[in-house]
Structures are given as C-alpha cells and as structure tokens.
Image 1: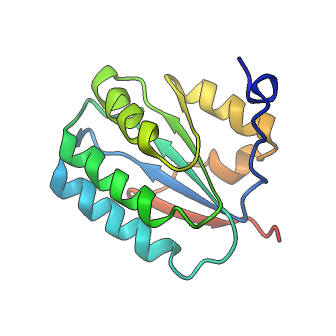
Image 2: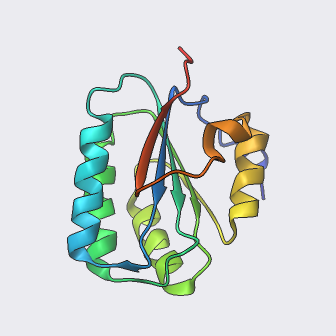
Length: 146
C-alpha cells in the first residue's frame, strides 16, 4: 500500500542529500565511526535532509551497528529528514528494520538499488542527485532547494 493510500504525506524534497555507502561488514566500531562522520557532515547544513543508504554490498550487520544508527536517528529527530535504503542481504536489512521501527520519521526500505532509484525518481529527485558513484563511505550533495 502506498503512503498516499494510507494518508501519509511525503516529506518535501530535501535541500541536502546524504549518500551513505555501507561497508560489507557492519559492527559497533565502524557503525559509530560512520555515524560520527555523518554528524560532522550535516551539523552545519541548514534545511531538510534525505539520507540515501546504499547497503547493496553489505553482507552482515551486528546489533552494535544498528545501535549507532538508532542513536543518530534520535539526535536528528528535530530535523526534517527522509530516509531511503537499498539493502538486499537479509541480516543487514533486518538491522535497518530494527532502526526504522523506533525511528521518529518513516523510513523507506527496498531490497534492490533499482527499487530505491525508482522511488527517488518518483519522489522528484534527479538521477544525477544520487546516482553517481563516489569514493569513500559518505558524500553530501547540496541540492540548492530552499
């Protein structure tokens, strides 16, 4: 069932897009490190945020990894955010669902990158906003929307 059918309003398009590439193995240490980098990346960015989690190469995630993202979600509760995830492997996807169930705002989780890309396009984002590959685990794109 779609958000519209459920009467759930979609958030406005974000002014900043945070692209997150998850590691093959997620544990407490690399989860905390990644979340710390996300905090630093967005702390001085005004406006709305869209987090695009690319976990297509992720094989395993431990509970400590999920806990790091739960904490980040709580810290960002006062910001207008949207979260989109592409996570095919069952264990990491289960960890993402764990985080999403306690999140303040809805998360949209897909099994494939293709499904997540389609969702982003249907929401109004351009493929050039999020589709280009990048080095490292994080990239911030300021989309120039007010």
